[in-house]
Image (cartoon, rainbow over all chains, first blue to last red; front, side, top):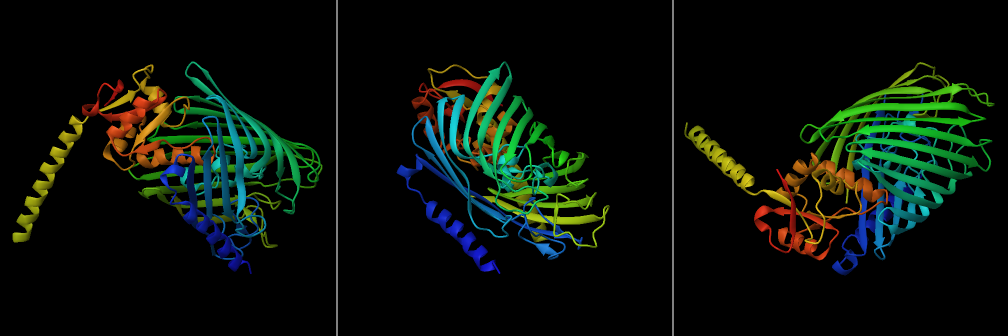
Length: 363
Length: 139
């Protein structure tokens, strides 16, 4: 039904990028145009539900179709504008399969940044939320070690950006660098377990990334006050750790979300990988689990766990190809994180075997 | 018979060429340079600057795909070109900055460093002159 529209939307973004690409030298100093994309296909052997790549997608692979290109494919274009040494702007347009079930381009980023010093900056406009370790690059496949960010960690906070203001502060104490971010704004929010209708929320976020050499610790507190559903404030605390010396990496991330209606949700993953020439094999274990009950009748919201392994192949400049296999175990039927369109035949304990192939590129 | 001896010969030729190239590459030591007016930097600081962890300096790149580019990143940061690209694309697409400008050759890098006290560059040792200050050998 919307195939034609999808094609149109994608070609609109492509045309925008193509037009933008041959910038002349004079403009080049002020405007940097760039883009990213993923052409992905995913197969799931589980026919009682659709495997999806982000929580808000309405369909994927498994039930609707055996193979699907919609979960992982996306295309983004970005313009960085440098107005003076202190003032810069960024606009990013993204086309991806969303809650509406189409690839209609949306503005992910649109803000002005003013650098008071090299270490203090303020941004005004639409700003991505750094809720978890890779949240702000979740759509840039090339920058991710995996085909996609483990879905479990994204489950409780599906809002990607907020419209408002943030303050960035970099603090150096000896060999430790801290990147502190304070963000306020409003967002259109898609929450799990609900119909994906427009619902606005106020978001406040504090994030601190401490870096010592190749090790980094990521701490986040995020509070969300939805205007309608679910009732009450969602409070999330996230702790992540990464060690990336170059030849290998270790990445651990976790978050705990508390809400009177949903109860308490815990999500985490552990991932490791290495670099062998142009290849980067990796594995991860990822889980989400409802810890305590809220006032809703949902007793095990999102519950599932994933074991995955894959390899990234950097076969050409600005391109990589990834192959990933995973087994997802559905621990409950209350909206398991990786699935949409759950069918009556689905049972807790069911396992889905998923194969993904993704081509990531930058331009 | 004939083709096999031909192959042996070309294999030997390739080996000699490889040895020569390796010797040549070793001869071309890389040095990190800053503006003569600037303070020196440690190897860790240089790695941080080129891995987008220190925005107080302006890193200047050689052309991606050039041998000095890959050599520099391998030795100064322990990362290959694709890993470096992934790191900078993360900075770019999170709106935190723009990847280093890639200049055509060492002459252009020297010129850029000489003109900006916040700039850092890397060039062949043989290309060093009085317009810039060497702060670190990369080996």
